[in-house]
Length: 399
Image (cartoon, rainbow, N blue to C red):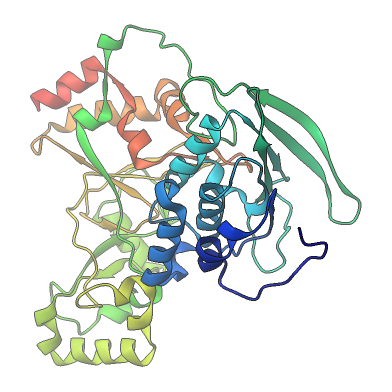
């Protein structure tokens, strides 16, 4: 067994599959993986990271640090341990479900989560919440999942101000940040239906370069009709609960980017459009991650116009906006498209009124995930499970 530490300047994911298996044990993986976001990862890097993670491979929206965690866990032998300083988003993000489920099932290993205060800027070049995960060697008895809530600062150090011990029994919780317990329904299940039975829910368009694809009134002057469409970009720009022509025009009067470039391959024949595309190339927009994987790069994803716009993150009330102007939402919104296309106005208003009511807001909180800052976030899959009163659902179904 070596008596001195040795340094290896190599690709960690490659090293895991080549040198690591032959290294003598017991071994400790100890470090602070890079936290590169998924948008900055080349396709070949993601492929190698998924291969190294094997059955624990997280989803495509995972950052590099979560791939490092998954790959490290996948390569631990019984006597090995792991201690990593990471951004904390993997504790609740949908893309890391496979990692959380693995840790929940690894009951023979003591697992500890040390969660720093959300307001602490631990990483000097990035404003992200942080945590430390410790996974010990396998033992002969079942171990809990222990969560330490930390307080302190970089100057004086940190201490645990609250410790939670969670027996790893049954299905893994969807969220390792708050470990919310599901509340028993107050009424019979037949009194409710899931929102998914009434509507389709999907994220808005991710352009890959908002500064190029989102345009002001001045920037669309001269562009042919049909090459741009109304856009919904930021919730705070919309003071009301209806985005109609008047509200959309008010955004234009304030100089907001209220149009989305909506180009197809044939539009390049127009000289104004061709000039715009050339400018994008000069600015290297086509080299942005999402742009370079599209064909052509300047044609954003085509999605149907949703009936309603939903803001998935809040520290207060969740907002639902009627989309009367027919705007295409960016990925700061979820679009909700009713399955019945000719639904009566009164029926839609009943749905909107209920969701905005205390009962509806409470139902939304039940399916939301709480971030360390107190921010609530709902994923599309969870919003689809929102329980709507059956009487409202029947009115929508009748149209």
